[in-house]
Amino acid sequence: MDTGPHFEVKKLELAEQGQRNIELAEMEMGALMKIRERFAREQPLKGVRVGMALHLTKETAVLVRTLRAGGADVAITGCNPLSAQDDVCAALAKEGVKVWGYKGETKEDYYRYLNQVIAFRPQITIDDGCDLVTEIHTKHPDLLRDLWGGCEETTTGVVRLKAMEQEQALRYPIVAVNDNRTKHLMDNFYGTGQSTLDGIMRASNILFAGKTVVVAGYGSCGKGVALRARGMGSQVIVTEVDPFRALQAVMDGHRVMPMTEAARIGDIFITVTGNKGILRKEHFQAMKSGAILANSGHFDVEIDLKALATAGKKRQVRPSLDEYDLQGKKLFVAGEGRLVNLAAAEGHPSLVMSMSFCGQALAVEYLVTHRASLQPSVISLPSSIDDAISRLQLEAMGLNIDGLTAEQDAYAHAWKEGT
Ligand code: ADE
Image (cartoon, rainbow, N blue to C red):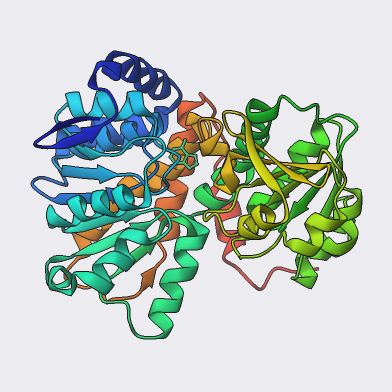
């Protein structure tokens, strides 16, 4: 490990490769680069301490550079032990960013690094999964009076924040960036759809065509995964607990059944529910030899790996692919049951992350601007900000759209004109 006063990363000499990867991401993140240009001119974050726990990827590095261009002082660590890109961490450290993280972190290091970010005494937090916010609330309440606000990236984090709000435990305002349409209908759907299959393919090189893919959970992420698996020539089975989502899956042309039935038929199992214990002992027992199991939900709780390790003998077949031998029947787990798209691949592609991170950058600006009037609660950004992100992305893609004529605008707000 290479360490310095403001960093701990795997190998500082990877910095040049990291810089090249960040530049590659910037080419695809035109909307966020537009925000960076404005931030550099207007300095809306001048002197603001931003503490981040986000996947340490090249796309996140583009966000970090954008916040710094706006005047922020940034300290960052990861939000998953397997998702950091070591070259990117090295590049950030070289640029003077306070950064702690490496791919394959121990649990100890994971929390030690979170505490480095906390020791920086952030005024704004950016979280993906709510671990930073939880750590602050449970172990560092002294910090709460300094905090202006926070931003949360993902569905799982928002679920935890809403539980905190419900119990009146939430002590500072947090923007649910995931609520933006330009986030959950883009990143969760197109991003997870593509990167999840990418992770499974890189881990196993399995052919999706002709396979039966079981997708557990039909939220935005599950819908994206199911769509892309079908696009690769797979037959898709969806398992759900929500009756409406189950109906949506049927109407989208997928088979729907309980996991106990799907377990017997599936070749590839992908969990994206955000809940725990989705693939359990009884399912492992029913599965066919050769089945591949992967998770794309935020935490590694969807596949019961403990039960699997008890039932079978584990060995690593190759990086990101473990075999469990259950008395001759072999089941394979990709990415150690952690977010397979980041553990076994590079996460979502840059373009889709651009929209998510426009949301983060604008949420930070919103919190700084409105900090005097915000209450400790989970906040959605005004739809005007979401629309501005759509416009920036269209502009980055060189696309124009129509506007309402004056007559149409009046009609859209009228009620007397009818049949
Ligand atoms: N979450 C999913 N993909 C990501 C990426 N490329 N960067 C940061 N967070 C992500």
